[in-house]
Length: 115
Image 1 (cartoon, one colour):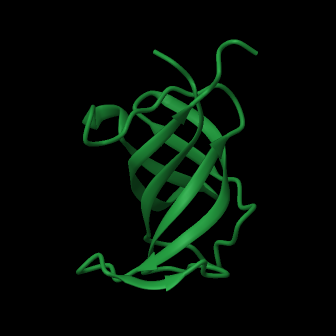
Image 2 (cartoon, rainbow, N blue to C red; image 1 turned 90 degrees about the horizontal axis):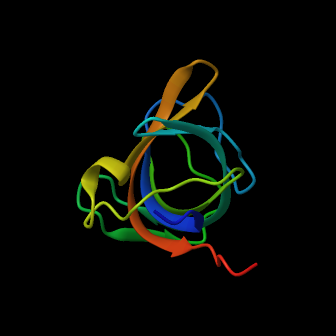
């Protein structure tokens, strides 16, 4: 297994009291890992039901929204695209002792091991 530098995923915000912007760093629960990951970029806002793109580069997302985001783990983390290996391709976003969002990983950027 190779750790990832970042990964692009589709996230559905379930229950967050405010707005989620780039820079937000909650804990991701993926399989058995509990690692803080930073929302580096919000790429697209999606229609939750159809999956169609509503907006490019939104400033924020809130409860009930779906979005394509780029996440950067703060510690070494091994994940896979959901299409390749489902157990390592799904995650829950937890903050304030509750699940605020869920997501599936669309693609990963593996870390360069030569560094």
